[in-house]
Length: 309
Image (cartoon, rainbow, N blue to C red; front, side, top):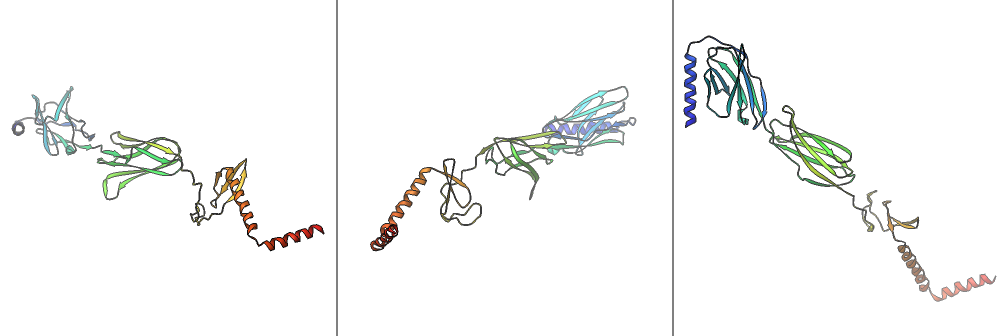
């Protein structure tokens, strides 16, 4: 209620000043366009010739501050003023405290008995949020991977870049608007990491030289070792064909290597060779023991006959 009476009083004073007689005065230099962050201060200057009787500031076509030679008429505590005199001019500065997105719009300063106005535009930008789904990423060394950073609730939309404090063999990123949501920016970082470190997503409002960043940890683990026991019917990792139980053996520097059809060698203890030879020996003995006695005797007799000759 008190604010309404103050508004009414301001209007009455302005009307009274406008109906008073006076000479015509001029605006030497009007305010300039200003872009600020939400919650900060916005300042506008209007320089006029001496002898003025009433100076008014409007924002979004509403009077927010009025000045007379006797002092200001303040109707909203967020709109304050400062003034500067020189020998041939007077400068009025309007200061908007704690600017809000709703303050964005056209702004003017004007004088009583003057048709000229000084016009400008106030733009209020909002720094939104940054998000990376996980703050501790675990990836495989030497394997390509990607990390996504989301910027939401920014006006205007920020430029997104990445800062890498991690060794990589390759890295690149691409930023774009999320399909169907033009208030959300995505930036996808593709990289092939070689060690541990940090990744930082940086969103910047270049008009204001203002930025916000988010850092996550990147932990690199070794790739899992290949399976020693390859089972029959398992797909060959190189050829893509079904594997078998066929292996081949080679000895190198005292170590026995057992190779599968994928051509990847797995180290096998030498004892496996001993077991293999023992089984082979038992198999040969078994084959001989299963042959008919008469056949074996004939073969021995033939061997003896050949020896005697």
